[in-house]
Image (cartoon, rainbow, N blue to C red):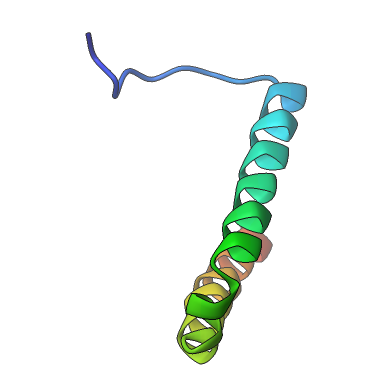
Length: 61
């Protein structure tokens, strides 16, 4: 069984995957709210820096 095999998704399958991952992030954030409050600056940086990088790559293409 190769878990790293490549495959292609359609636009609506990608949308479902994104919806699933966003929902998981919200659930984790709500459940571990007190834990993440003490790390809010680090978590925000871990979101902002890659988001800026990916946005720059996207705009250049």
